[in-house]
Length: 282
Image 1 (cartoon, helix red, strand yellow):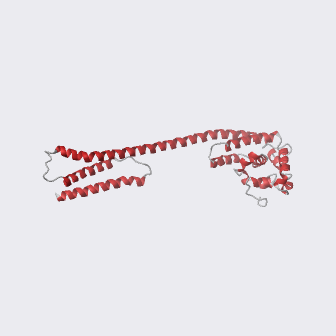
Image 2: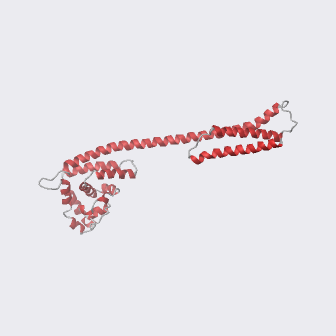
Image 3: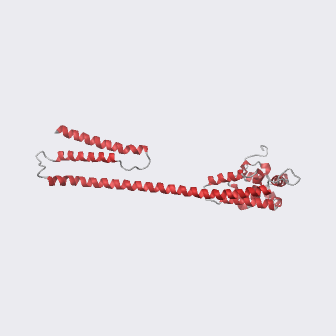
């Protein structure tokens, strides 16, 4: 009998340790909460049953007659089993609630991602429509050659804007600003320039006014930039420099970073919009 008791105790600890080890093992492989496996539950039941046998052997004398005292046996087993089972049921319920909460969180995350994706798809549809309208306007007004001239209207406007560059660069920006604005307004007063630049502002305002993250805004601005001829971007930057609200918004995207500074009517314009080049390097 002593060997049987020792075997039961050893088996009890071995079963409990194995169950605990197998319970902790999935946590090392998965970050999410998993339901209890039936195999683990079986091990736990086996360990609990063995513990009942061990307790009977410890607390019941050899002279105890099971046939005549079944009521006491039932009270003993029930008194130990009911709290244990109730506690296990509570643990399972809490784990189930945790799993449901985790799944609900995942569902909410997926729905939020889908909503963002749909919003960006709607944004792209409108964005490319506005971009096509701008390109159509640019093709009609800025990308055609001036009669009896080798340059397009866009390049000719760029050359005209640069006529007084040496005069403006010789002064500080504060000194030349009134004359610079007047010069820009006079050179870009024609409808072909104002209409095309207005279309460009619609594209830019749509990008800047969207709810997209800043990195996505800059991505779509780069697409807008690629759709423009270099002279067209210079015209947009130059016009924006004369408009306080526009130039502050436009500056965030550093549109002058890929434009050589000698293309501007004044070197200060390129520097303001983030030109990375110098006149000597250009």
